[in-house]
Image (tube, rainbow, N blue to C red; front, side):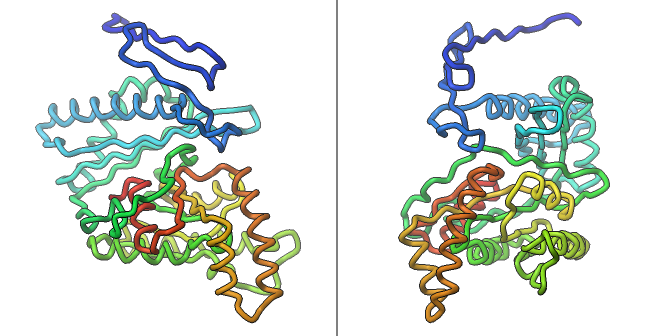
Length: 348
């Protein structure tokens, strides 16, 4: 190989909690460890975010090159990368999901361009056979969400919308389909209400979609031994429902519910059959208690159980660290929270 360019960088300090810089001074960043990896979620970036930017930029360059060769207009194309750090039987590893949007092209044409770019991109060549890389091509000209979707209509800023721990996403050629979003959180966080509001925003934008309440897919009694929340039944039903919505033309699936472990998330992705982003809703204790008290008025036993379950589930979700984005919902209406969630996962 004839070398055209060499980038040089160094890291000082405590590794993932240190500071990184290039030899020419063009990049000088603080590094922090995300909460999902046991860190303090400090203000700095992390290796996965830097890799995501690098891979997306390199792939976009390859896509533009392929488009020029084929005399195709890809001026408005975008490439989004989600780099996930996970742990398996052989230790820690990475996986990557690339989502490539090419407005103005039909799906076969877009897929052809993306496949060619994947063969050309140096980052794709470097990772091929080493880590799981999924590339999803999106065609057409999606209409934007209504004005104001990127920020609450009241003018209040959406609080705490961050991207820290990109989800581990493994759609496959055998299971193509639209993007999907799981809105999760502890009891009383507003998962279903926010999902319904997000569906309303997508409807205003003209985006074919489906909203799926996961609780409704496993509402069966009695639960089998060892599966108190009917997760096995949920996955069987989700596989059928998601496939039906995709066949009907849904371009986005919005799921509302709880996934407690990385393994459950893996099974959920397989059942949905497409790329799956995860956004966690967070709510302050005072607001959450107010919501649960209103929901269980006249049912003190139910209120007590849900308050206990809130604390339990909050800790479970903290340990799992599966959410790619988080949105603080205190002070936001359902529509404002939905707009913040859609903006956080790139569905502006």
